[in-house]
Length: 156
Image 1 (cartoon, helix red, strand yellow):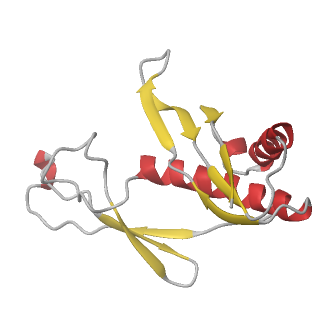
Image 2 (tube, rainbow, N blue to C red; image 1 turned 180 degrees about the vertical axis):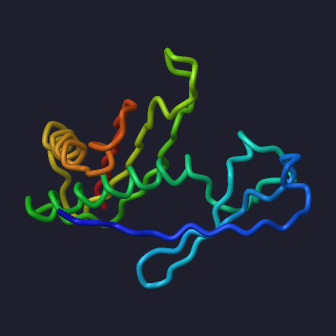
């Protein structure tokens, strides 16, 4: 069993807090002090109360899922003798209303584009590797929304 920690810090910078007029900008701090600016999504909180250049929690969920999937995929490729030159993904998280009327991330689509050095696995092996990465991914195993895989393989 493992335990993971992060620090989330926010400070009120306005006197109009009770009127919902305050910055949603805050800081996430991880491990050895890596810090990232975070904020509410501009889809949720209008300007000027969000930080446009900051990461929002919904984006972070999509990125965490894609990152976890990639790490398991790379490990499987290495074990099976497939040299991966590059791996790029543009995950997309869809927020929609659930049956109970509450909004939640109902689906995340991963679109990994994988370039292999000399030879790519067969189409069947490529999909098996992605299916295994998905089944092993801690983040995928932790969310209730659908995860869709649309991988692409390249050689050279």
